[in-house]
Amino acid sequence: MTDIPASGADPAPRPSRPSPVRWPGSVRRPGSAEFERSATDWLFDLAPARWRHEQVFHRNPLELACMVRLHLDAEVLAMQAGLKALRMALIGAPRRADDTETIAAYIREQAWAKAVREQVGLVEDALHLSAGHTGRKRVAWRIANDL
Image 1 (tube, one colour):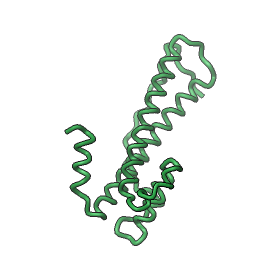
Image 2 (image 1 turned 90 degrees about the vertical axis):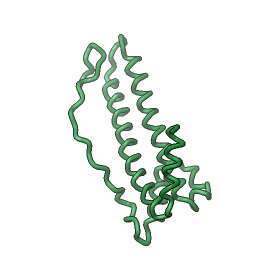
Image 3 (image 1 turned 135 degrees about the vertical axis):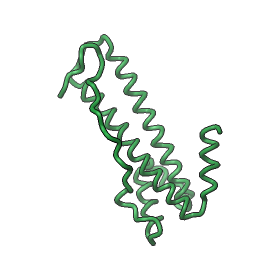
Image 4 (image 1 turned 180 degrees about the horizontal axis):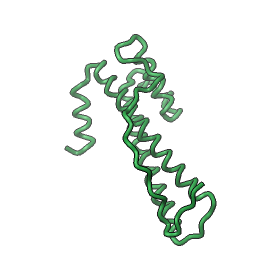
């Protein structure tokens, strides 16, 4: 375990290359007979458990993918806010042994949410294409981004 420098700053981040987004292993390839079912199952595994009771998501995996992506966007922002609040709280405070591990947990969770969000984006794009909704995605993206 590394200590947080006395200045309150985290150790310098290690340079890293962005890794390419990988197709989720449990989701069958688009065009296969089991693609939509495997995509839906995987998305439900990422979603809050109560979403399994929403019949609309069983009928429309594209909407499920969109909501899971938005949910992961919120997780990324929540981890960012939590990390910022923790770092602010640590300024001038006595150091505890768990501080570095807690910071590392926030960073790991944020990285996980970003990586999975990218995978959900791949699946969402494939669902759009398989359903023939290419135009709808563009409209939704423009609305979401106030364009």
